[in-house]
Amino acid sequence: MELKIAQIKELFHYTPMEGQQELIIRYQEDERSGVKNLVNHAEKKLKAWKREQNRIEGMKEYEKRYQEYELICGIDEVGRGPLAGPVVAGAVILPKDCDILYLNDSKQLSEKQREELYLQIQEKAVAVGLGCISAERIDEINILQATYEAMREAIRNLGMVPGLLLNDAVTIPGIEIPQIPIIKGDTKSISIAAASIVAKVTRDRMMVEYDSLYPMYGFASNKGYGAKVHQEALRQYGASPIHRRSFIQKIMESERK
Image: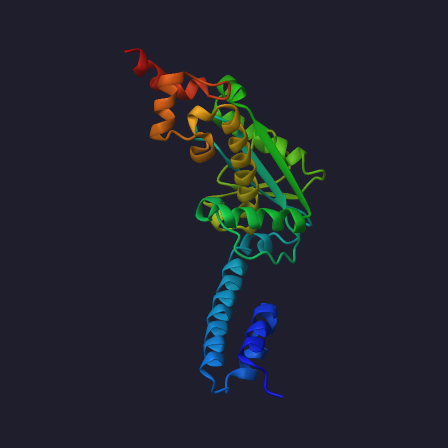
């Protein structure tokens, strides 16, 4: 019995991407315009899905190159540049058969995409660790040393010892685990991209919480970065407890002149 177009639409909607090709073949000779539209749409989606699979395979280059290591950990940080809030590092060990699509540098993703990927990473990762260093500590030891400290903390919080670290651009001092620094690693390694996303989502959520405590600075929208409205609020209200004094000196000095 011939299915109605609405029924075929449901078939395409609920069939996983792996089964879409079979449906396309089954209905590609159907002369009904509604079915032709469904087939064309499915073909486009399938092509995009295959392109993404190929892109992700390309981002497994380093994981494959060093596959003799059982546990490969990606490391990245967010929050080196803001005027307020912590610097946060993520450490993620993905399974060797990782099937998470759309992993990328967190800055290249929308907030919705990051949140969706964050949940997938938490569900599928072998281990996830986070390191968070406060603004006060950043002022004490400088942002570079605070970044290293956050990364070391993230590694400790994995709950296991990785065999190899893939780092976004840096070599972390004080770590005995072998390390591979990769320039723009969050676009070249799925492990580093996953760490970038976990760190970004974690820090953004923290800044939203801080916004409820210090609403005058707009932390929910600017995440502590030096947006114009943020700088104006600094001049009007002064620094909050989470501002980095070493970062805001010039802004505060200009207000005093």
